[in-house]
Image (cartoon, rainbow, N blue to C red; front, side, top):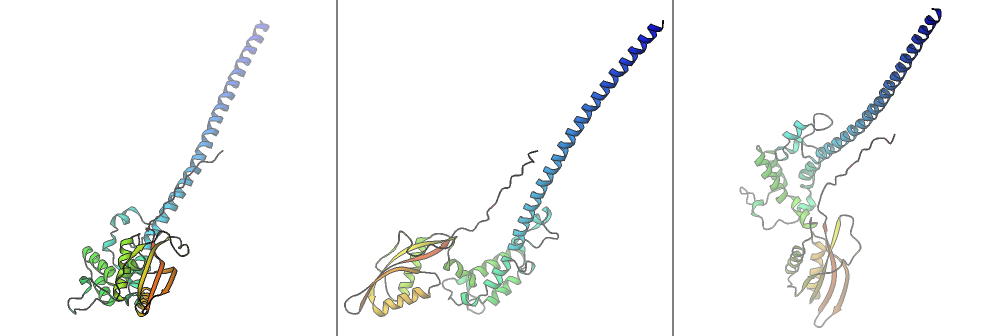
Length: 289
């Protein structure tokens, strides 16, 4: 009888040990899964934090560009929100609302530049003040711009400022694209103003001077002038005074008969690359571990 009781106790102890072992195994599995999930979630949190930080940096950069160029009024916070961007209409923004921006500096400081404004205005009747019969002054153009009430009035006033103020000189001095026909026409006008009709004007094949600066491209021209000494000097003087740069790199001069001066030269004029904003792409990767 005692032997049977001992065997029963041993069986119960063995069964309890099995349950304990199974419980330990189950607890280990649960712990392992929990640790793995915790590690995964921590990695997800760090990765998402990096993505959000990069996104916030992109938003801040875009907001800075919009604010400094004067496309929209200054945001209420540090960056623009979606509602502010939806309501932003560049054509309805007054210059006084965007001080110290690129747009305000162009329409106020650069447009009022006396040196640029000293170049005569020609051939544009829209720049004539109908009440005075004279060309608009910057002060008059600024008054029209400040007095614009509607978005269309503001757009028209801005266009008038660009066309009739000192700003009109900039595209002539440094065009924004390659245009050989316009360049030859400008040079031909200088010849005619000097009282001489050219026989040949042609674009060159390669620039004659030094390499232009980054973003500035050279356009070569071949010049051939055969005229009196006084006429040739007048032509060179007018080329030197031209608002557009003509940089003579190589030239040969010969004396002809009857006070004739023969000039062969190669000159460079310049134009800029198209203006654009370069976007960059950032790839966010999770940690290797």
